[in-house]
Length: 466
Image (cartoon, rainbow, N blue to C red; front, side, top):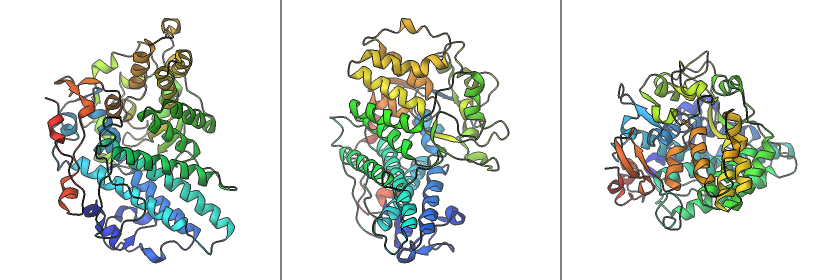
């Protein structure tokens, strides 16, 4: 990590929106030295803008993380018309992989920026009570964004959480800004998860302070913090915790699941916030991301939802309105007026209902599991025979399938297959019977070779698909 952050940590932190493109340069002209970076409430707002820019760049949640989540699983095909993500799709993985380096680099940039807001804000003095409310609101979001980024990196560069894996190496926890040239070390997956949950608790505490207002769906709002907690606890198999967090997020969001083809299309073909969105990466209609857009990857660069996946949907499932037919790129084909951009989903309402369904089923409450499942499945598939879904253990694979179909192209499948210990066929069936739960991506070689303490995962390449 020191290789990646030595420039940032040695000197100046970029704070304004206009300097977001330069955040890894040594001396951005618009940056402010660390000891004078946070003097006003506006400084915190500017710093938080930098966090969201970093989260939303194509090198992190703006493309790479979502693409890895599906390209590396059993949902996709690739025409090989271009090389974009073909190495991820075909598991031709090297420690020098450019996409993995980008994810590590920009994930830690978001973590570092979040940590600086937290570090400065929790010891801020000399501000008015009104300004401190703004600062506390920024701190709440920063705890949330640090938890989200840490969670993503842990699940890419560490094994899935389990009793067997939790003592294995995860990533580096960043509790406070790391000084230049400081030695760091990876901690266990379990310690990463404890740190993530601690940040979630802190985010809730700061949001709960009197006078601190919630923020919108383009930001790490109250519902988003609880939705992230539900995902984290589901991955940990803390089913009761996952149910409680999901309920809390649903109550905070006060949204609804759409049930018509037109409404479903609008969620992905327009830039307005839908009734299902909790936290999305916002894009502007004037953005032109060209080769760097997720929609370009799916629309013209060769990645697609494979026919086997599309065949799993019922014929009148409203989701097929985007996953088949004339819509190049599926859900990730861009908005109607600009096929290079769209808001990118990070946390959505359907995931919460399916989280509850899985958690209820795992604890034997099959009636509640079915009720949660139908909140999504019955509204997406108008011909669904609800009576055919039994309230017993046979509902578990039904829920797993619904999660696969609902979250298709949103970057979940790789992680879900790992945590569920599935043996799947990847590379559109060319690599069969892959025990994906044993696989973990390598730490980027630039990081390992920097000499600041981050070690490679031993034997990571022994678990590539054969």
